Length: 457
Ligand code: ARG
Image (cartoon, rainbow, N blue to C red; front, top):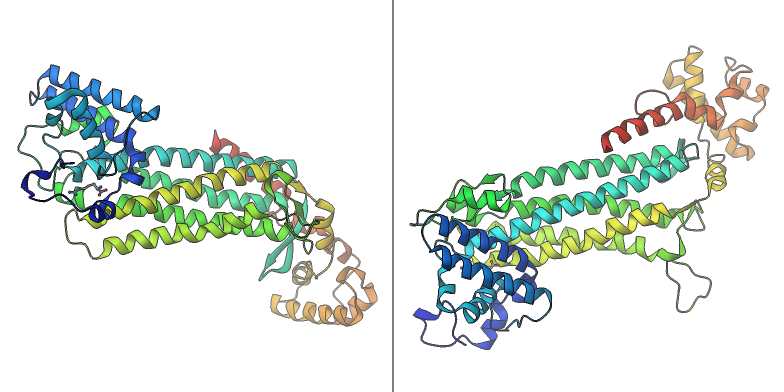
């Protein structure tokens, strides 16, 4: 079949070339944006007297019919349609005849594809931000439900100090809040209307780009036609925000995997989010969490892929840039369900608070508190640190915990230790002592929660 750009060619395109260059297999998901963009464009052409009002009406009616056909599965995508832009224009021509050929006045696929991608990404960012918010809410609910549950906090994956589970979950919320900021910031750069830059130099027609922006709900119009058709920063930024998001989701998933292991036994993930083994009947595996962790790899890869595509390109549009789509779509398709699944996992999680508390009782988690106590008795911190270190060594030799030492034993290490040391070696009290801004004390966590609730409103 002859191409819409076939005028200067003597030969048909080879099948291999068609297959190799086509993006229709994946860019058909931009049909809605492509049609919306074309409708706005032709409305503007009519307003500016570049096409007749009745021509615009015919074109719009044809485009709307095509949209319906795509949505009901009646639209015949053709293997020789290079991309979604060509497919729609080809069928428009069949539907309304020669007038269809006026639609592409004062535009190029180079600015058209930017428009489609920007419209598409604006919607997706909004959806992702809602999904992040839902995950935040789910973590917040879980935190409030288990407000006073205590577990060991870790450094180097070694038990370090007791913390509140609610404080722990709020840490993830902080990460997710930064995520929302990043996506919202990225949105500003996506929300720029590119159409009218045409191939690269702008157009000879008296178009009104601001009118198109207004029709399509863009808050800005791009300033430089050369930059506009060359630029994929807005996608890179999105992929980069997504990569950071994927890091965080992966770390959260890792924690779910660890905590649900028999070694930790801190949580039970609901059956609905686990799978079994084909050979070991007893197994309940945290596959969803594992895959969220595993799929972070492709999200990073997608960022690297597009950075690499872009790095050597001269201005302006180069066909290489068609390679922006699959990484973008794949990242969106990976990140969105991961967010939804994690929200549900936390919503339905079983917290084994007894096991969490038990884990704080072994491993000298209050050693820092004991050193701090000696400081209040007048010892410089480094000396206190040294003495408690020796007490820990002694405990390890005797198979004891700090709180099992007698007062006499303790005094042997430092005679500043008094009866009141009992208070110090109490996990709950240790939490309460960490009242400084951002610490794990209940009052502090409650303050953080109140603040969050206000922010989320
Ligand atoms: N399918 C192309 C892409 O995604 C559309 C733009 C093609 N422009 C061109 N002059 N061949 O980048």
